[in-house]
Image 1 (tube, rainbow, N blue to C red):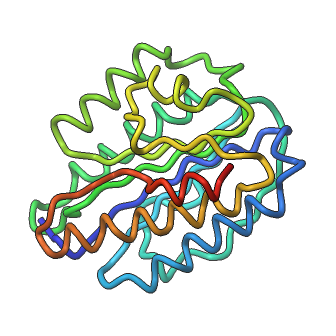
Image 2: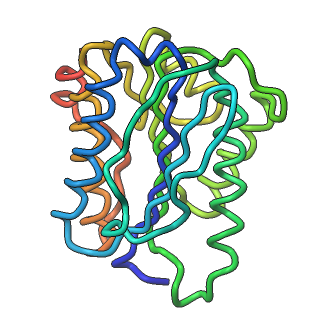
Length: 210
């Protein structure tokens, strides 16, 4: 296992309701990706975008190979299906790697501006069981960024702890990604130094998102 390698999976809501924050969300995601280059160590990126459909843009590629993201809102919000599939596919990909090539830190970031309304493959109970398994058995770190909803209730309902959850104002989506950049960078530094990983936003970071 490589303590200097972090695997980051981004699960991005591109449903039609994202239209009102399209530019800021797109800019925030790209700033997050660019900012990760400033933290020592290697990063593999998986980027999934979803509406009523589901699309992989990248699967475990080096951060340097990731082009700027373009958000094009459309459709509904099949959140559970997107999260469930992303977990399964990331897990299968990592399991296929030789032990010495596996990342020392696995991070999943979910961003949505609305509640689930169109999943057909996964239930909330199934996704909750999957997330809890990955957290407890493999020490995956999950972040949930939610707007226009009770993000803490939604994240808690699928097993994501409050510390890694943020309820952001729609006009502060850029700040939400800035806070996520800071939090992920802290976790990466802690992992490379052998310190305890704290997957929690600070109070200041939460205030910036309100």
